Image 1 (spheres, rainbow, N blue to C red):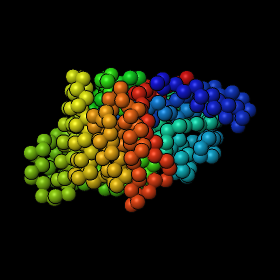
Image 2 (spheres, protein in one colour):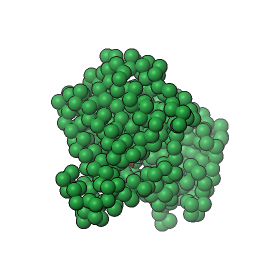
Image 3 (cartoon, protein in one colour):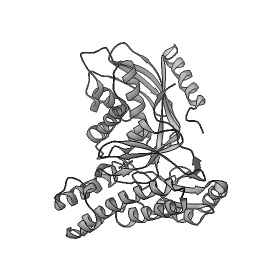
Image 4 (cartoon, rainbow, N blue to C red):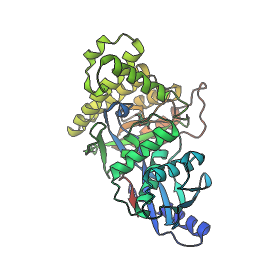
Length: 383
Ligand code: GLA
């Protein structure tokens, strides 16, 4: 499936026309992401392997020729703010855009404001990076409007700063790097220490399937930041600068059992990412799939970020026809899981999971469960 969705782009252009009474000067698109493996490793300087999704956020925009901005989102209403003001004064989703603009703002240069109309088909709160896509898409618009040289990697780092400094989530760099740098047809292997990336081809007999449980949880209100603190504690006790530097046997000296389990997940997950990359290289989806299953178990038992709905859907997926392996994806607690499935019977797989998954009573869904195969799509671009 192509990452260019003319329907969404046309809708954003028409929306811009209606609101601002003229055609937009530029249209930017940015995909969401699903992580194949390497969970909660990014803020520990580890490895991750996401793909860009055929779901995207599209912004139709024109420079405002001032520092004032007026933005309308098809789904979330409208916001106005000035780049001369503190982004913390802009509420809700507008803060992501205002934050990116304020970190890119150079008072010496031309006006950087723009007016925009936003459409998106990335499910929000599903652990598929709708907020990172908004950050990277709006960063790309700021780059074009301000005629800045900002690289895609720099745009990703700006998005991360917004999450860390303005939203209050201690997240890593994976989501924004995936939104910015993903490639058509391949997974993106990212070393979160060096920020080096390379394309990893997924064997052609396998398809990535997203399983959105329909449950939702705010990353900030979750225990995400607590997990990051647990890892910092392990790092301090080990006397290293990150968990990237240690092996499983080094963890023996950790006295605190909780810090030890958290660190065990991170260190073993890094090895799993490398092993999946190797298995893909050998067209060995059976081994890759079994590593997906091990990852879920580690996230459930050592890192404790799964939850009843994610555990249930993974359990069903693993028994479904054609499944090589399945695991939760993204921050966890709720939202989506991902499965690696044999291409020739992917329809049977999806039907099986749809028929058999019922959200546990202890964690009700807030939106419908959706199961869909996806192909890897390219990162942010101008249309
Ligand atoms: C969220 C964060 C990422 C990453 C994942 C877990 O998506 O934004 O930085 O930590 O959780 O792998």
